[in-house]
Image (cartoon, rainbow, N blue to C red):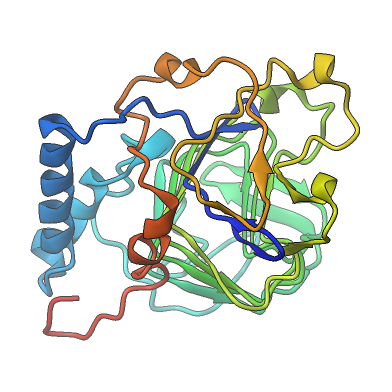
Length: 301
């Protein structure tokens, strides 16, 4: 998240219970985490090797954050999309809609210029056709989804949000993505009254929030406008138990952050679901490969 103008800050975020926390309790980058980094790098290098039949599925070993354990189609067969048609009620083989899946990795795509579409009777599972209302034109919409890893995507210019995660979705990681030319970038939970979203767990890490994002914020010279992740006009007794923690973030031009809640809350989730933070000044290095990976047939990415 960037705040430009009078004040800005950069964040590596993990979200849970609709409240963001940066408390990973991995202040020391010890031998365990160094080994994890080497393992992930090795798996990524093998996954991007130009022999997809042998190595592509190894990407499924790399899911970080709350989506850790998401394996996508690792144990299944390769499914090639060769038919561009889209019959919403009875999709044909070799079309994208025919490939029903759970536990999904979406990787390496450009998603843009998504428009609203009419609803109707739509097949949304192998054995179910249901009445769906009109779509909003989101780039990606996760509705009641679990174990989803969105990685190395480039998203821009959709009619509604770029990524919506709603209706009890959880165990989601959004990483290494590049967002540009849009106003409503991400929505986590669509209604305060939907109690299932209280258990929502989302990791947002290593993403680049680029040019043309309409919800970037430029603070005025007033001190009260420089608070990052402001709680608005809510009284302290309402938000004092929210787990909001900042580690290593870089605040400039008077920007400030007010912590609250339990500083040790992330220990509830275990180190395998937490990602080690890096100081805010490293943001350009950490996000330089965000977005789709530029690959060429016959050569490593």
